[in-house]
Image (cartoon, rainbow, N blue to C red; front, side, top):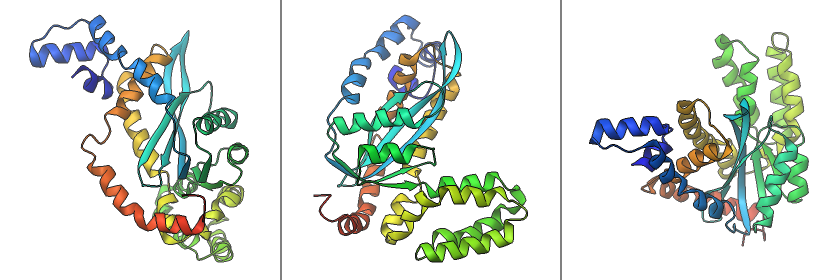
Length: 297
């Protein structure tokens, strides 16, 4: 019960109060901390376990948590989810950085993943962080860096009035459903002609993201559905935010990592969600095996 409540973001004091109110059990905060500290060894083992030789897709992203280190500061937590050849979504690790999200730190994370046994990744889906494509290429030269299309669309909406979102969404759809790059460029030009004078910054946003957006257009609908967004990692981040929001801030890195790891342990306890996703993975696997021939098996 202590582990479960902590995974939901409750503080030691809140866990203590819940146990007393619900079960009439008096448990000290020190005892609660000792119970949750038992997972620290598990974290070390989990964070250093060997990984698969190849992942067809790797989703990477970061969230921000508040940690007190002298004073409360925002710290990025880097997360990577690999999709295995069998279709299993494997959370490869959690890394707490300093300052804002940076490509240099990502290079260290990706290098660690490679050192744990991952020799090849076919596609890495990420946001448009500057320098990240170079870090990915340095780690896995054959990997395709794919900008998360959903991130790109959301950033487009941030530059526009909410009143225009519905119409813009319909106008953008032909761009990311285009049959090839030339078709997408033509449709984007039509979008710019309609919206460019009202929202000029959108044109620059798409121009900067274009080199990492266009790989998406080279693939079959089965692959496009898998890499369209970082939904797999965004759902995980939503669980992380729910747990960390209740805490406000953490006294140190260890406390933050412990809470987030317990969230990871509590995901999909019945395994039904994973089973459904793996069944839908088979058409994509066939498309990946053809597109990246000789690299998956």
